[in-house]
Image (cartoon, rainbow, N blue to C red):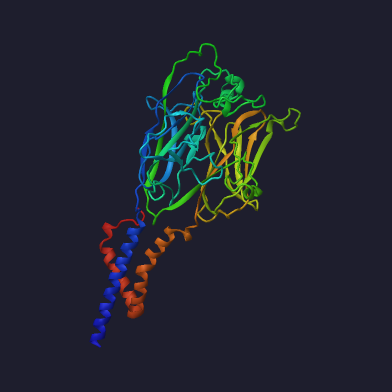
Length: 472
């Protein structure tokens, strides 16, 4: 009998030790494995004077290196003293950041106007997002006037994976390009016309490619290329130049496949003319034709609802692979009233609306879109099936005409959590020690388990002062 008691005591002791180890293991695994890091950079300096336009590509910009997961990208235009510049002085038409690979033994291409992105450059391989517009809209991040108040953070446990040496071709290294399009509207005769790139205000007859601009093309990117100038009031013709930068903050963590779920970036465009039958006809481009911009005609004054006229542009698309939507946001210009992405059955996957400023200070400029609302669905609650027919809708007020507007929709899609390495890692961590504990419970009996827990509680209470929250 005494031997049985000693044996039982030893069993309980082992059980106590296992329970304590399992608890410590769980506490350790519940603490973040990775620390968020934020790096702040400035673009190359650029100079603008009243009416002038910058639309340049900057290769090999400063960017965090290594195998990392991008978690956030925030950008804004600042002056040489670091002060934010309001949109009514320098209108940020757009900025986009694109990833590429360049041969190690060659220099990056020189910075130049946006008409030469370099898709045919012999020493560059473009490493764009997952689609769907082919060589158009390949950016990882990109916004416009809404940049200051649009949330871009990627929620946990997700991240945008970059810098994986296994994906970089031999003999190449990863680089990042910034395309920046800014318009100085100080002293403009028609500020909104300048920001909408109306051709008449720029006296534009040919675009950056030297191609003649058609009469029916009233305004857009072709009329406000790098080096063009919008009409300004008398006295501003020789206005003072000032130096500016795009200041950008990149938040990231070191890559850890056991704790981070990679996401794919998809960008849809309401000008896309894709249809499902195009896939079978042209598999290389998948039939997508994204024109990026379009015009909005003013509704007739005879319309009884003239003050509330809405112009709707829509397109259909699909994803080569499905998954869970974990983030969504649209991009619109002034006049936009909202955009949405719908599933094949008509369900709303994400709606995104503009936030208009109400003041004069940077980030709250009246009459400008200073932010876009975003979608952060609960993981697994919004799904897109492979090949599912999607509809993108962009709405603009048409009480007055608009030129060069956009209707883009940016989403992040992840493999369902239960299919990911993250889920496998979490499951193995949680199941492993508890299997051993269950085995000992069977051996020692329920009484042993109760006694072991009592010992743990007693031990824990003695260490109360040193308690560390599990999710600190």
